[in-house]
Amino acid sequence: MRSDLNRDVPLARPGEFAPLRIGSLTVEPPVVLAPMAGVTNPPFRRICRAYGAGLYVSEMISARALLHGNPATRRLAAFAPEEAPRSAQLYATDPEAAAYAVAWQVEENGAQHVDLNFGCPVRKVTAAGGGSAIPLKPRLLARIVGAAVNAARGRVPVTIKVRKGVDEHLLTFLDAGRVAQSEGAAAIGLHARTAAQLYSGEADWSAIAALKAAVAIPVLGNGDIWEAFDALRMMRETGCDGVIVGRGCLGRPWLFRELSQAFAGVEPEAPPRLGEIVALALRHGKLLEEFMGTHHALLHLRKWAAWYTKGFPGTAALRDRLNAAASWVDYEAALSAVDPEAEFPENGLRMRRGKGTSCQVVSLPPGFLESRDDDQPYARAGALCEEADEAAIQGG
Image (cartoon, rainbow, N blue to C red; front, side, top):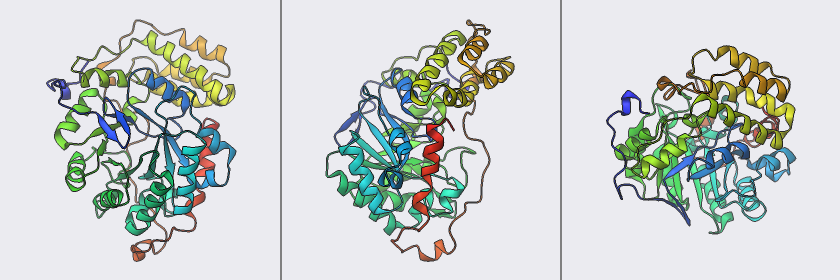
């Protein structure tokens, strides 16, 4: 199935796209699951991995919380026994915590790749000098990246992920690329929106091309990969070395199968019918139950119910029943009422899932822009993600 936008996009030609090489890792096809808070936990990574090869990154883990030994954070950071390669993303705001967290991930958690998040646009994070605010201070960014790379000691590749900048007046991605390269990062991922945009509008793929032209390390493009053919178009238009898939796979993990097929030069098979999707939702629910318990799994599944059924006609009432389910019996009873032969709707291919479409005025700490040469972390930045880790492990 193709949307009108991609009706005439050709499949990959033999040898057209090289495997993605990140340090010692080879990723083929060159596809990476975007780390998404409250989403890319071990159950969802397991679901996605079953559909195709790629690199499947954990949700964002607080480096400072690991340093403090936070139990919820360490549980959230866990990998399933069969995961390979093991890829972890860290939220780090200071060199000390970054170094500790990388060493812990490699030595105690078995991580084979570590990514550092410098693109989080959440207001309370940027207001405390973290996330996408950090690239505003290239010297601080360099200290954090350098500490992480040194802690890895060449055992695993360290990469970073950024946005274009805070807003269109404060673009930081080119400086971030130069810092990443100079400090030994193995690659850089760019979500081609600013923090002010959040997830609104269209991603600016020209920024990905500009970053690719500015650095020698691999560049991964992120933003608006809703179909496998979007990935082919992005790589052709920008020259990037790989793609990062975020909201496009929410409720549609078979997108990774379609990506594998398109990169292999094979027309992707049709999306599953509603009956197969229901079976997948039930399997996902059972994996979540094993990970976080029945109560929290049912709460967590509310958003997944909307994502799995979005676009199918007449499913609004079904989602209401699923959201009201107080037990697995209620949940399974609601799902048993659907038409299993209902075909996936074409308009569902590019239907937005996950984050909303609003913009924001980015909050920064007082005086933050007056000291952009400063290399010291903002005092409040480090502790913000511990409560997020607690919420994620409880299905928040």
